[in-house]
Length: 403
Image (cartoon, rainbow, N blue to C red; front, side, top):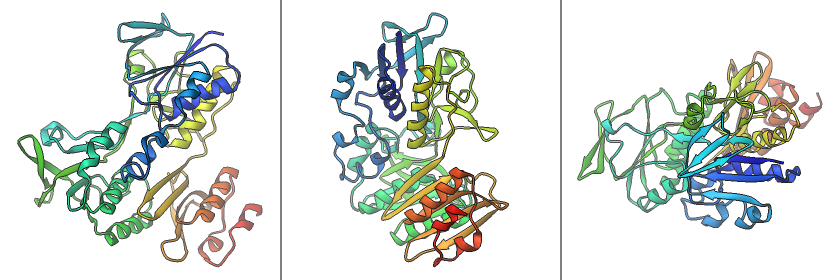
């Protein structure tokens, strides 16, 4: 049956090996992860886990017994340093492991601030893995002063958690508005107001010039408008990049990540990729999705294709973000929208519906799971939604599914 090696023990890697066994693969499986922990879910790290509302064990995707019972060899806390596609081997420390099929589920890496502007000072944090959160947690306390760099979802979620724990938060976003790259102005306005109501100082069109240090620790920040802040810690949320170093060393084709075909196969016929690190064909273009649903769905399709299924991966993009008592659910991709229709509910309930011409392409729903579910179903079915019905808060959305 051969030996399948999976590099990257996150959501995609764990899903892939589980699906291999579920679908009857009886050969050897080795799952290699650089972190010392069992594969775990990342979204709660910067929310429930940081708030102390979730224990470490609840983060784990599957108990350790699952891997033992399914004869999956876990190699945790070990980093692959090389792949030899010709010899079909991976190098792990002093050990060389042979494979018949290899899957890369290496995920993504956070962007860091340059050392030249103080990015290497103590107290400057990124939000990506368990070690990052454990290092930051003692600083997130009532009365502390924090600077959040970046007004995307990572930065806003960090700001929300800090504010809930009594931290005095200042968030800076170099672009004209928060969420400018990923959402309409309506969604930006909603979350700007939400954060301001909780006391966060949101500054748009302002970036970080440099951090100020004292004995190697961050103590302040100078912004691009010349203003200075006293800060005790900094959270950097300026995006992530696909982890492609191993793929590049192995000579695989890259294009906004590890380039794969519709089946998840890379430019090497024996190497596959899934999750944050992989780009794939979608609707006549090539995209890369950074989300838990994509990591799971794509990894499971890749597992099936490694066993000969020859199935195309057809992505149905959806995402979520939790900030304070608001749950944002996003269906679809808003790329190319030319109009946004607002559906106003009560209180903090609202949804924004994105159209390209007459076609519905995405929905942002805040505390409105019904609007999200209807919008998601319509997008998956290739249907649209009558804007006059969407805009009427008293109209029932369900009939749109039958139209």
